[in-house]
Amino acid sequence: MSHIADADPIPAAIAHLSADPELTAKLGGPGRVGAAHRPPYPRLRVRPAVGGTEDLRTHRVGVPLRLEALDSLERPVGEERLKRIIHLALAVLAALPEIPLEPGEPIITEVTSSGGGPVPEADGRLRWIGNALIAAHPG
Image (cartoon, rainbow, N blue to C red; front, side, top):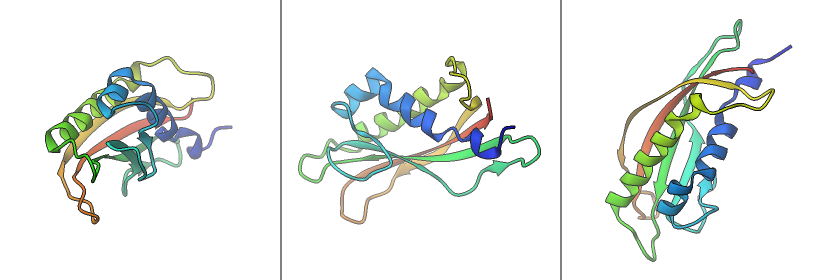
């Protein structure tokens, strides 16, 4: 029997973003995608956002995801590159419904994006934010 927790698309989203060669190149190398805010920079921080939908009967979910392109304080790349990183990451996520699945993985049916823009970090570094909503259900 499946559970609503089996519909969580965030691990698949992070894995897909981490494996994308164009995004890896745009970020400056591997190991720069994940939930942590740590060097090396620029970095794509991927975190669950507040909100979304959960149908406890059908186990269908709409999971909001917040993407943050974080710049370096020592060698900043600038807002334009951060914006391009976010737009590329959103395009990579949009392909998730077309990717073949392993047994037991959540089935991602749709990815949409909304809003975003520049929001400086508390430490003064540049940051560009993007938002995605991933619709999924257990596989």
